[in-house]
Amino acid sequence: MEEPRAHESRPELTEAETEQRESGSEMRESNSELRELFGRAAARAADYRGSLGERRVGAAKTFAEVREDFRRPLGEKGRAAGEVIDELVGLAEGGLVSSAGPRYFGFVVGGALPAASAADILAVGWDQNGWNSVLSPTAAAAEDAAGEWLKDLLGIPATASAGFVTGAQAANTVGLTAARHHVLKNAGWDVEKDGLAGAPRVRILAGDERHATIDRSLRLLGFGSDALELVSSKANGEIDLDDLRTRLTGHEGPLIVCLQAGNVNTGASDSLGEACELVHEYGGWVHVDGAFGLWAAASPAHRHQVAGLELADSWGCDGHKWLNLPYDSGFVFSAHPESHAAALGYTASYLVSSGDPEPGDYVLESSRRARGLAVWAGLQELGREGVTHLVDHCCALAKSFAEQLTSAGYEIGNDVVLNQILVSFGTDTETDRVIAALQSTGTAWAGGTTWRNKRYMRISISNHRTTPEDLTRTVRALGAITH
Image (cartoon, rainbow, N blue to C red; front, side, top):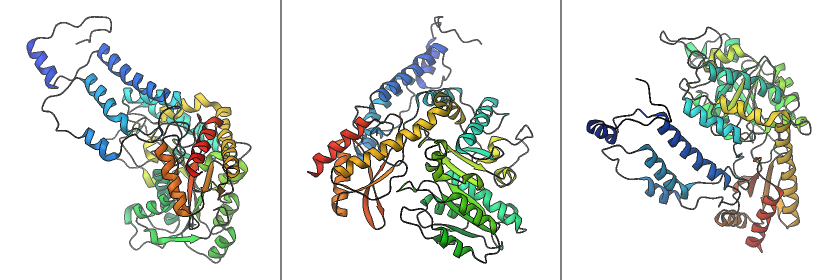
């Protein structure tokens, strides 16, 4: 039966239909009802986004308080969708963190671009499964196009495979899954069929300042975190090539080395080109964890920091960090598409495929939303020049911020090479006090970290909305706390 059009009035409901609607068992909505409901939700989201510049940055309520607001018995009967949304907005308000705003400096979080956010709204409305091109040609086509743009922007070989994942953890896990397949296959072992029991030992190395997701990936893949051999790091956190060379001398057998583009504390990147050449001399696979630092490649002024990245075998990168896409968005690439697909792909009698490599062959999930639509839209909104400007803008602000903090009498603990700043306020106790006090003011939000056995405030500038005035306001707030 055809639904009434938006301008048409709906016929009066019978008593039975009214009871059915009120009970929640009638789930068919008219176009006008959906337009009103979705429009209401989008308007609330837009109002929130538009207020970010002046909102309190940290949440106004604690988790315990917000949890108490949300918890209540589940009703026997359903409720009108609009009523539910209105209540949800009211309950959520106190627990919202303005992490998309210009003065949120924690965790390398970027605020989502307008076009990318709007595209995500469409993706939810269209409700597409992005596993393969049969389930959704649109979802697959968006990922295909955006994947080509991403490889070009990041300097990754055009022949590499691309998978759209949830974030850096999934990207590292997928990249290392492909690595496990590749190095063991070269050693004559089918790990997908026979598992790791009895397999040739895979030697795995990473810098002692690698991100913790590397260790977690090794746990998930059955290697165990103790399988990791740690290579020492230099002054700003980049891997010590001399130590790596010494450890590899005379090595034989399967080998995986994890490198880093963008140290989580300092922003420094390993010497990717030299390290890749060294590892390849021993037949090893190089995986680059480039959650945010890989974006230096998109800037002519900063790409020297990741020179030689194209020589690696796999790369992981986030979209919801420096590219300013909505959560959750990450990317994994491999220079060996056949190993990538062999490690991740699967078939079943009921699954229909085009016969060509599909998006689902390069990721862990089967049921997955069409996250490539937001990537496509965000990159179109920015263009090549916009991506470059985003990276350069944040790096310039980080340099300026560090200079202002130094002038205010605070200690900068790292060489500011990208968008990361480490700030000490004297003793560890005082630094932690200042961090807590800044968060409590609501003016800005930055977290703490321990680097080289010392506590620091860790500042990440990753948002396209951040301005010099936001830095000034934050320095002023810190001055009120410390003086």
